[in-house]
Image (cartoon, rainbow, N blue to C red; front, side, top):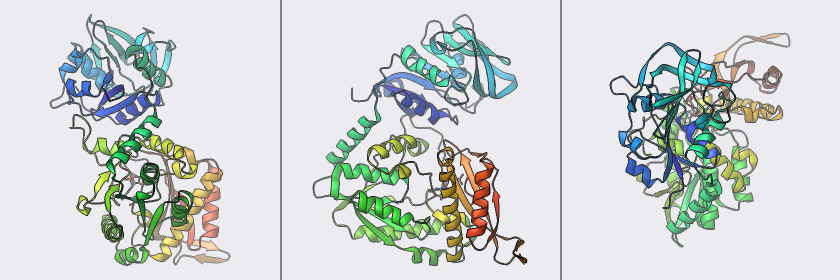
Length: 517
Ligand code: XMP
């Protein structure tokens, strides 16, 4: 069989499903996320060594609750149910699930009563992360209850004769300190995995596949954005096909300070790639003139991007392929993964995407990878560390960091503020602890004093936002160091003319979003 030994994670719509798949890969075992209705045959074709049923928001006893096929329980492949997945497995195998008297959410003390199998090598009591409203209330003689918490008498189970185990808590989150050991137990003690999957093999395999696909006279275009995904895509393609790769970078005038130069020095000077920079700032800015509505800004930027990119691409002879940095989460969220029928949640408003009508065949070398895996590969491919570990930046750039209409003057202000924010968080060692940082220019004037004068006219407010997140669908604001915030504030107020006030955003997502527009 060609597929590596794989753990299939069935997605019941839980917020941590992707995290489960990543945790498995961290133990050098390949994982895929599938829809809940995946068949036993499809799973066998994937070479599954084990199945994990994810958490999810539904109640297993309510109408229309997502289920998996009963045949999976007959495959004689170990199954781990997590939260909803445990409730579903217990229900299918004869247990009883009810609404709990009190919902359990957050860190909870777990008492382990059976320290073997999935809970082998654990201490007698440990903290776990709970997030559920239903519990398994009885399991009958077929199951062994393995752990309990104060309000959940059956917090972990194993079936006596079938290879099913379940945990009511979430071993995949870092708030469960023994979570990694629990995942390990499942992979190695229960599924007997070899743990021989390596990211480097993915790299070699992908490069070989690209070489096979692209003919000796054909060229591949890769749109660079300055971000990690397109940078790693370009570096991989160069490894595969050398100078048959042409990179196109559209300078939309909405980039951060030094961004265009960074792309030029990295790709043209360091990697010696053929890089075409389309300088189109004026075109973007004139089309954005006076536009205040955020979605309208996005729409215009998306359109102009396609126009400019297409003009540039037409000048490249023999270009048959377009390389894109589509990641595994995008593939999962579009419902294209095995077994279909995953919830179609759109991660974000994808600006900078190119329509199929451009007529290129797509090459998507990162389709099976998570972001942090892409970052590691980027380093292996020789990308500078800072580029490989860069925070994400929205496709419409600083246009969505200026609330209201975009002007050259406001772009200059927000660009300088952004640079100060980045420099200070790097200097303070906070950059890796923050998932995304932003400086946002607000369209209001507030009163200030400078010297002996009151200031008001054309004096703006900059909002600083730091978030911490793994999936960007939910995010916490960062409890940042006051000293660092103080330096950022005084530098912005002193160095950026026209800013007399800096505020720090302490809202989480949801209900707030990461960007302000
Ligand atoms: P929100 O603001 O929706 O952002 O919480 C989630 C993530 O998406 C990024 N973002 C965008 N990325 N085009 C993009 O390519 C966009 O229009 C866009 N809007 C938001 C945002 O920076 C964050 O990482």
